[in-house]
Image (cartoon, rainbow, N blue to C red; front, top):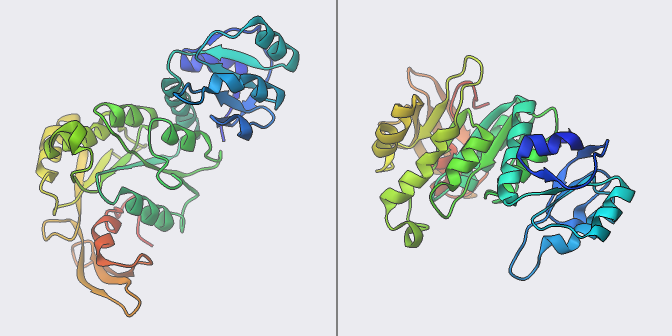
Length: 316
């Protein structure tokens, strides 16, 4: 997990330090004061029913190395922080604080980052890909669907220092949320699982959903000799729109993977075994194939599962 000197927090995130300089190294970051341990960064989020700022004193008493607040602390709280060797920082946007801090740690890790989004199947894709990669690499992945502007940076900040691959699910409700997640995580590889109708009541159309999901390309970057790569499914009717309107103008390579004849990597001869698990041949083209079975029951998982690209991230 992240380790950062208190005096670097403000410079890294744009937050303002309220307390006098504290010579301390923070380790880890939480948004729940009950999870604070010695040296933890506690970020207080205001809410309609519960205001995290009200728990700043509890976090300090529990050993927090830094408390990030959205309202000016009173003199008593500042005095307590000084006595405990805890820094207090102020920010207008705790989400942005987390995203900036996660970006700093992502760069420090120097690992390969995979970003996964889509209306349908992104959690399945994330789970299958993480399981495959874990056979060869030290992988840290989103737990459950901890995939929003708070959950994703917390996932990054909790990654072990020796992580080789980060697999990050990226969800959204509105425009510009995927953009912010992508610019924080800088994925080297991105996968759009499928464009469906979730959030259509907010965004108005599937095209707008495709536009919002396509924001993932805005933070993508190369990893050494590995050019940024976007994986799409040939069976999705919005694949040409995403490729031609967003990926190619941004200089992002595109690979098609799924169950369509147009896919460069595709599943064929799909069948189900006696226990309901999909069995199929994964065809990489040029006669190179792998016989595969998924532990997840149901053939609906196959198009998402095969979006794990062949190189440099490989099927084992």
